[in-house]
Amino acid sequence: MSPETEPTDRAVLLLQRTRQLLLDCREVAEQLGVSPPAEERSAIAAERIAYGGQVAALEEGLVTAL
Image (cartoon, rainbow, N blue to C red; front, side, top):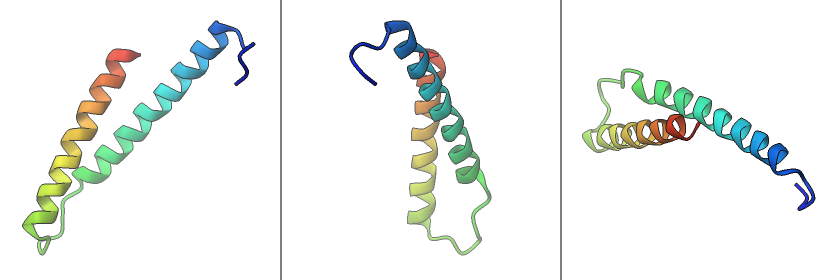
C-alpha cells in the first residue's frame, strides 16, 4: 500500500483484513472444540483449552473493532 492511497481505501482494506481474521478465529475455535481423543494427555488438553480461551478473546475484540 503506498502512502498516496486514500485513507478511505486503507480503512476498507483494514476492515476486510479484520473480517478475514475473525473468520479464521472462528475456524480455529471450531477445530479446538472438537472432542479430543480419550488418550489425550492432561497437559495437551489444558493447552488446547487455553488456546481456545485466547482465540475466543481475540474474536470478541475483533467483533468489537468491526
